[in-house]
Amino acid sequence: MTIQILMLYIAIAAAILTAIIGYLKKGHKNWLMTFLQNFTGILFIISGLVKAIDPMGTAFKMEQYFAEFEYTFKETAFSFLAPLFPFLSNISLIFSVTMIVLEIVLGVMLLLGHRSKLTSWSFLLLVLFFTVLTGFTFLTGYVPNSVNFFDFAAWGPYTESNMRVTDCGCFGDFIKLQPRISFFKDLVLLVPAFYFVFRHKDMNQLFTPKARAITVWGTTVLLLLFCLNNFYWNLPVIDFRPFKVGTDLYQKKMAEEEAAAAVKIISMKLKNKKTGK
Image 1 (cartoon, rainbow, N blue to C red):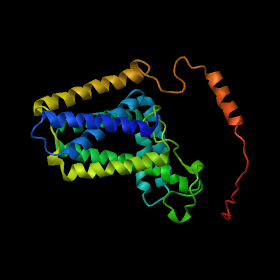
Image 2 (spheres, rainbow, N blue to C red):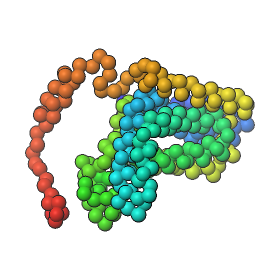
Image 3 (cartoon, helix red, strand yellow):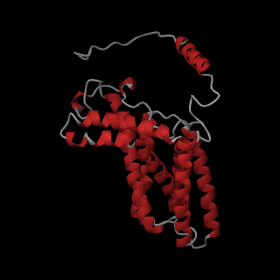
Image 4 (tube, rainbow, N blue to C red):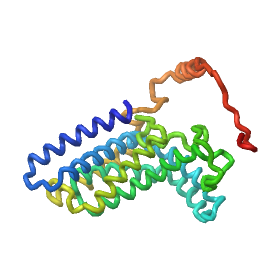
């Protein structure tokens, strides 16, 4: 599945859900708000669930980010931030589970319209966090390996091999996104994020406040148990990893090597690292 197909399915599901809500709730406030709630809510739930299947994989991805941030910041005026990242690396699994659970719970809160002001600001902050990660991943493509990220004057043309982290991990192993696509996706999500913040009073709310609260807290507990089951007690319930149980690793490696060998190189581009020519 591609990200375009996934987004199309989510949009269709959000439109159907919005129509049902509009039909059942005669005092419905805002069609656009309800559609955006449903679209972003479903997107966050799906994005979180495919990561909840393998929290350990997300933890490994966060360790990559933390290592790169430490290296980047320790050579700048922000060097005082560098010691924070080894600490975060040590608790990357806790960080991973917390982020995954927060993402899914926020999706549920958006669908329900629970505590609209808190939900709006939490959604904006989480999208900003994702935008920083995906933006860093994409923009390092313009940064030569020997150059610090903040040395903007030394940036060069975009080169995919320059990227410090080659995959954002937004959808785990379910869908591999190019960093550029991930970054633009998060930039687009900032639009509804700011819309929610400024118009949170127009959010559609389902059920009673008590029922919404019980649903949110119940979802949180179940998700924590689900994450623990997928890395501590058992293997992932649905395994998207390339080395899942039943995979013939030797045959897979041979197939990859044969595919690489079949690629014909018709030209090469060389660059003098000293002169830039």
